[in-house]
Image (cartoon, rainbow, N blue to C red; front, side):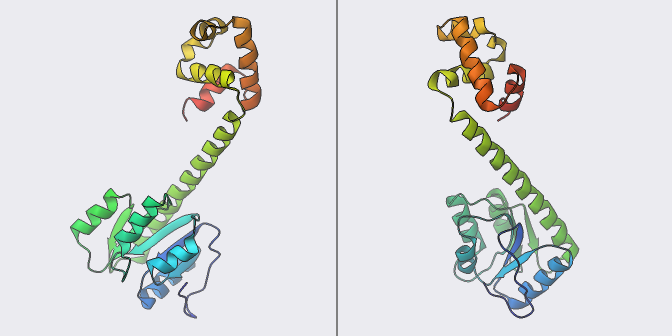
Length: 213
């Protein structure tokens, strides 16, 4: 990580604004501006340096200079996508044009700012990017919890679960029994286990929780 004495190092394991720019003056000014606004900041002089510290992914957002030497901004964005490392990206450039901004935004960048820009404009983009990151993390956490609860279901319990979620109108014991070719009493037993293992009190709660996932 490239940090001068004017570039304080933040805890990069919490939600952090990562600044990747080969210009030390830019890293200093951007870092100082964001630190004054209460953000945690970690600065890097190159894409390669950033990747060494980012590893398998950390919470936050990325302020990324388009015209980096070596691996440029678009190259880094492509690498993160290929490695399935999700982080909201704000591109900044002093010489980028419309083709570059189109490529960046099509690949998922949330914004593309040309230098010079107002610090307040960048701060607003950072707030938006961090909120996007928070939502992504919560969604990922919820999906992980859901996957964990469903992994405990037996094959037949999963069949009952899938049918109830896919076709709520068949959630009665008779409806499920007819579709699966088993008795309503057997369906009752499997459904009770599904509710127990997923932590749902009723079939309506089960449908409400899992139909949107």
